[in-house]
Image (cartoon, rainbow, N blue to C red; front, side, top):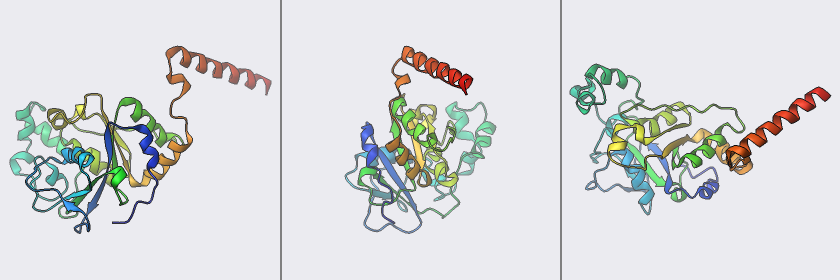
Length: 253
């Protein structure tokens, strides 16, 4: 794995409750990284929390029985036909009939079989490698700053993609495959909500490697706490003042 290419120390200013997590998808077994103990079965989304608690990076791979659908999404094993047909979602009450669950699977991003054999997880501040995706568990105010750092110099719109099941695919695989920043509330996802992974107002923001230099550079340049966000009266006063000033200047030109 190549070493970290971007200085991400500015992220420490956020003081996140849950440490940001660096994730790397690998075909070959990563060197110098310990495996996740096989006697500690976790779901793929739970590994994000485990990475925040772990004293050092770890990898998940062959021989580890993940406790949800992570291995299927990563292309490490096939989905059972009864699951592929949509039976589970109907029984859970997430979908009216199996056909709706089956239809949804066509939208969920997955890796082709055998492409990814190992996944490395680490706290961002302990990752010695350049992450493929970086996952931030933020409160709404922190998420607003992160997302504004995406659009600040680019004009890129905010776009959220998620489904009521298999949410980890949208947190990890979608940003990697599409090269797009993604965000959503874990509260919207059946498994994440059921496992009680995060407080209800948590926003997961995932930034793929292509966007990290832009986001970190913008975080260093822009004003994190805008005057208009202080109060409604501050917003109205500033916005109204800008409109009046621009109208006056346009008449003078």
